[in-house]
Length: 261
Image 1 (cartoon, rainbow, N blue to C red):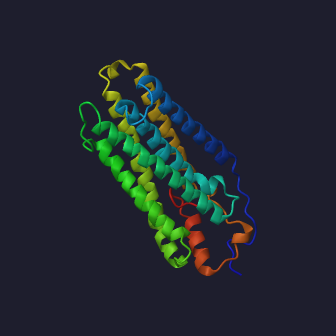
Image 2: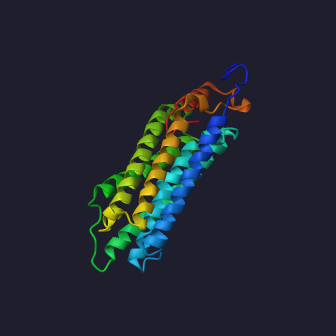
Image 3: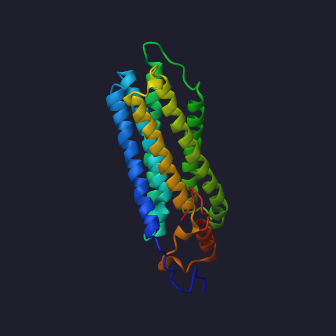
């Protein structure tokens, strides 16, 4: 009989649970800070008719999509380890879809705010924009490839197993690029303020936002890189055809962002 283990393994997840909650606290603080940054220190939020205020949706939606939601979608396999594998895959994909919608609207906000400003601003000239658009393109490709590979039923499970390491690597690279782009964007926005060197309140909020993002990302990396915290297959998942078992074992032992189970 093909099984993962003959006896159930007990995992001490107390420290994992503490760090997971801590990650959600810092992720939540980051969202609050980016809202405050836009609402109180950058003229607030508005629609496309007000390009300056329309821009403020860009950092909010990108932080939500590429940092907070993407980070939680990566953690979902370990955070909800008692859920069935197919359900976890669906949640993982749904979170990425929501993140992608936020990213698309966030991109529209920044392009519109540049194009329709009183004095139009060039697009895609900064390192922040180059890294950011690269992350978005990779995110879109990764989402499509992952959807076809892991949710389309006619794909052979052996092909899924071979693709999984690339999915893991792609997820890692995208999350790193997203973090770099976020930090560069915060710095770029702060530097546009000629009084940045005096560290006004808005700059303090921006800096604190960057610190919270870094802590959140570091916690995500740690939680998904520790073999002791990997998801153990549920009892009903332990007796499976060989090709499916190979996919599960590869995923469960990957120990990297984007493909941990």
